[in-house]
Length: 438
Image (cartoon, rainbow, N blue to C red; front, side):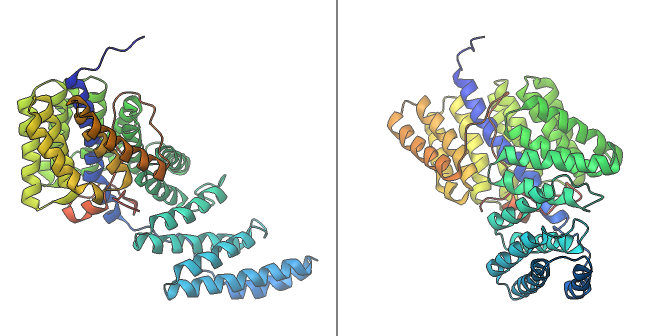
């Protein structure tokens, strides 16, 4: 079926929806980082004692000199790697521990050194995470994910949390497909271990809802968010950050599906609950921005503007500036554009562009796309072309590809900066919040 031409109000609406996707993640993802640090799931093992014990075992098994050499090599590399971690030489630690891990894969599957090697990579990944070295942490967690394929949480305790951590790192850099794979595998592991109604699934369903929202898959967003909402109401109660977040995603999905009355009701319910938990928070500002998006979609522009202004007032009260403030200014600019107030919209877009360098490449891309669409609407095609060149440069740098849209355009998540904004805890376990930069 041939689609209807996009009207100016629809173009502005879709640009605002992209910005709102970012604010959804800003409001909640940083709280995951404060909820629980990524932990070492291993049981400490003295590898030197194990090595001495198994040298004799290798001889008894009739294995060759190469196996004995591998055992000694593993012990040496493991010791070196751990010493490098202690003194903060993480690159050297990674080189030694990854090599030790490779050696360990030659041992029996029941050999304790295989599990110790996993644990060493976990510890180093946690150090990388604490230092903000996301790419390095992601590299190690990817090794763990690949090499643990086929294991259950009974085989590898807390493997699902490592997969959630990896998924969040992938989500942070805009690789939504990889993030979704990690989250789905974590969901399967937790369901297999604890059943389909465990509270541990709330976190993963919320993560999946966020990824699907950013992937423009409104139906799947609604499915995951509804499941998270049901579990959260059962296990943690209605007045909880988890319920607020789930409602935000169900509202966003219903809005994208054209269920505007349902969406608006859910936004209002989420706002009431959040204010009962704590008023004047960044979460409340994000919810107000979502409400404004719904009001814009239904062409209630004065109401949309009032909602955005209330959100900005909260940010002013909290003294939140920089890129997070710019994101809501972007929403206000889009409303101004829909009202035909081009000069005012342009001035706000210019202000947003002053902060764009502080955002991650994924967020930069979305802000540039919003500005580009405005420039095209204003027939400022030369300027729009230059913005498009910046978008293409970002795509080449990050390897991003256009999303296959099920409904509306939404953006990648962010969050580390929001840690400073006193956002309530949303999830029970994850040092895995998306952030502004690698």
